[in-house]
Length: 486
Image 1 (cartoon, rainbow, N blue to C red):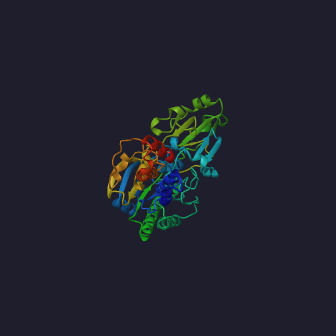
Image 2 (cartoon, helix red, strand yellow; image 1 turned 180 degrees about the vertical axis):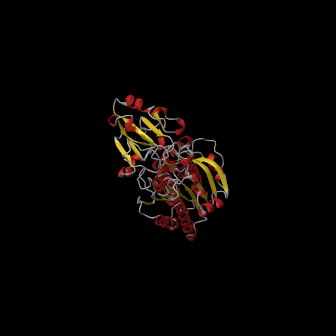
Image 3 (spheres, rainbow, N blue to C red; image 1 turned 90 degrees about the vertical axis):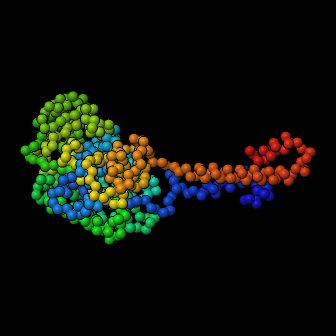
């Protein structure tokens, strides 16, 4: 190209573009404008949820594997889950850092009056993307940042959210054993460098299922809890066998706790209001009530003082600290049972011995939280945190920018082996979708080419001075400008 320019065989403007283009191409970038990393050295993180694992279960029976995690890492004694303390809302809060009113999964059973659609964890509606796209889960964020993710049965992880699934995932199937789930995760972490995952979420249904069936106070729960510790031990051993134990940051937590119920503590709504006045949307202990058109005042007046063991809220009067008002999927009337009480339409429905969903400030609703790995301190005990704080903590460990969220890295920075530099911003920045490298490269390229052209023009002009001695400088300068299209 330089020879072409010297011979005058092509347009100088075309030559300029041809010289700049290779400089721009020195910065390969993906569809989001970021460089595709050749070497993936991002820290590894595994988030495990044992559904319904209450905070005090680890003190109930010998738990040697949990004890090892605590000795080698950290434990948080009090973790406040998001309201309502149900499975789907809280698992989405853990991976988005958002309260339910913001991420849109406000209950296990929902109705959206705008869409005129219903959502239930017991139907295939859970696989419809439209329910999930008010937020961006961490597996999507890390993939947009150039990393890779995996998911084993985590609620929402087998749904296409914002056009993406995790790079590796298992569609939910309760019959798949914990051991099989772990073996798949080890494969994902151990894959060749360009295919291995950086972040994985793992879900297991127990001890929640047994807690509902038996109640947390039942002595038979001891075996269930001990089995969870054995499963954690299996996971730890598999990580060690694969050479991953010292490389992967491991967080073990849950979505909520569990409390004991009694058939002596049942509230029957049929005693207070007829069913043709409302639609029952979500289940006990926090029940969403959708009054039929024009029946709001009648339904509310019949329920508000009906039973001292439940509290009835108009949507706009739900306490601010619940962060559970500002979403169309939250029903106009909310009934919350007091701890240990069950709300039913009548006693013909199925009864559970244990349940969750109550006020998230109750101790019985709080989950376990332990963690270990290169990012965490050792043998450290923290008093309290909020479950939404986990999201910015994980983003920090994974070296990615968090999306705006309701959590705070500042609240949990003491868990880290090396505390992050405090930020002056209270709202985390959005993920930067573009890289400035191509822009800088282009600018430097243009400067270099212009410098070359200035030197070239000066040399050509000096060589032509004898033949131009009868021309004035006023004539020669405009001719050069016109020829170069400057």
